[in-house]
Image 1 (cartoon, rainbow, N blue to C red):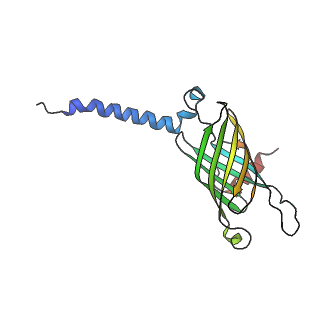
Image 2 (tube, rainbow, N blue to C red):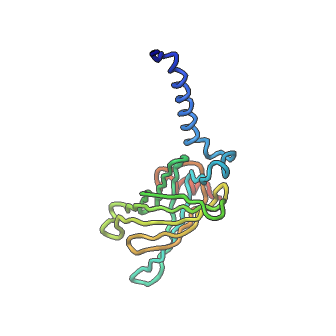
Image 3 (tube, helix red, strand yellow):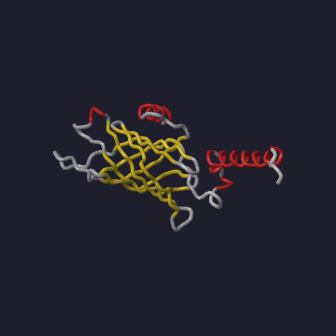
Length: 187
């Protein structure tokens, strides 16, 4: 019985290495190229930093009036197989616990649904706001995507509308950094 030599096995190692490199590059970078969009990759590209408007249906108990809209920023990091979103407002930060991007009946339409955990700043916990969980469902508009729009609800019994718009490519780490950059770019 012949013994397998390194000369016989070497081509297999090369092929596996090349395929692994191609798959890694495709997953991280190439998937978002327009040439693959629609026919091969059916996933919207949401990468970047976005402006967010939250309109709550919550009434202030003392006045019975709706609270003013809350503005913040959503930072999306995405590959073909993964997505993370961090929503930052002046008072809190939210991160995704689970998410799904589903193609709708019309192949150009997608719905982005998620469950998130919100952590208010520590000085607000026990005073005005507690750590809570919530969900949202957003329609994805455009190709390339220019806006996401829908609604959210929380385990605190609050709900409202959510609009994600004004994307820039730069990824921000904090609310303050995003706010300063967006203000600088406004006319």
